Image (cartoon, rainbow, N blue to C red; front, side, top):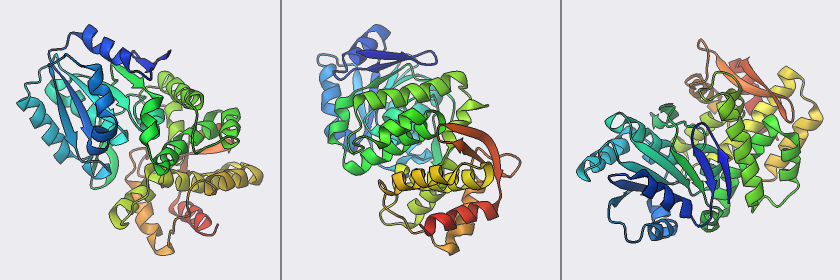
Length: 352
């Protein structure tokens, strides 16, 4: 079993989840609660419940799956259930699920009675390589992603590769976008290793490396004052596209699909503004379009998307702020981009 030490907490790589049982018993918690959605309740909860056979001091809290659940109304529902179940300050919340569960469960725990302990058991590739590591909690308001939240570290994270076996291919690809991003911003060798392998089934070793990269960034800059901004590559445009899709599309884009679009647009801006080579731009575009379906972005949606980008929490003084690439494996923080430049990048994507 491998372990990575993060900012005051361990990340366990443990297919059996035996360390989760050990952690809960050593914590001497008065009660503990497992937060899941209907998907993880079906596919992953049985394995976790088996780890607690013979223990009766826990309850299950289940919510609807999907980004639509990540709002204050669902948080209120969870807080009320914790009260009804008798949760106190010595209680523990186990977040068993994908990015929505990690983000919202962390927020719920960090604010309930001014903070109770929580751990993450991420069940999607996206949550394993992204949402569960770094101590960011968050919920959406008016479809603006993660606009309300805290920086609160979990007590531990438990990565079980086995939990990914029930995931559909589309969800694997969603998490893969964040892995590719890690290579693009900080590790050209890792990028090359990823794009040269079987990306339909990323190996446990590649997932470990991705978590290692993100954890190194978070350890160096836990509150996003500098280096951690590198993780925002693709997300300024990507979050706007994702939000717009959630509002307007019958089958909305996944997070990874939207971030892939954002990375193409922001790679184009990297070429135009920072001089990243055309060869590397083409390499990024070819790789991402080979993995993610082309999405229609009409010219008449540009202003809506730019308005959404203006609400992004990373902006400075009312100006849209992007992380861009000098080259593959090296990024540059704090690049102010105009509406005109961003619309040009959207047109570039539409014209591919």
